[in-house]
Image 1 (cartoon, helix red, strand yellow):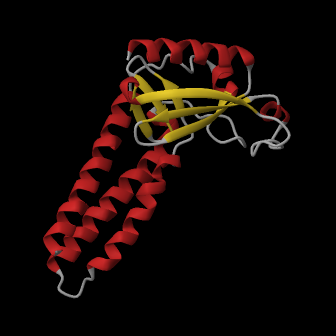
Image 2 (cartoon, rainbow, N blue to C red):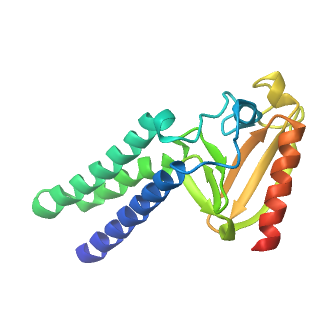
Length: 187
């Protein structure tokens, strides 16, 4: 049983480490969207604030926190492996920060091979569907700001999860819809 838990733990750590490395390599490349400051203000990961630029220098804190969480998990695994008094039942609690790590970065960027939403890079072949939902009086994002009240919620469904964004401008909505439709046809 202990061996099974260790293997599952290592698979999780490898999975999250792989996504971290992919995220950093994609952030080093130039994004199609956002291309300027207007694009950064037209799309929001969180309705309260505009996006951060999808470059490493603007997201050092979030990327460092992600790396520290991974290092902490690995350290706890090593301590647990070589310490007799360590209880493996507490190991599950260590995954709670990593599961919520998708919201560490306030980033959305579209690349030729996929998109970054938060701290996840999603290749185009994993995108299953998308839709825009008008933000009206009954919407959960209504009331954050006048820009959000007049905008749309973009819901991107992938094979494993879904990602939501707020689009505040009609031009950006049309631009994203065009790109997403092209990618859906190509996949």
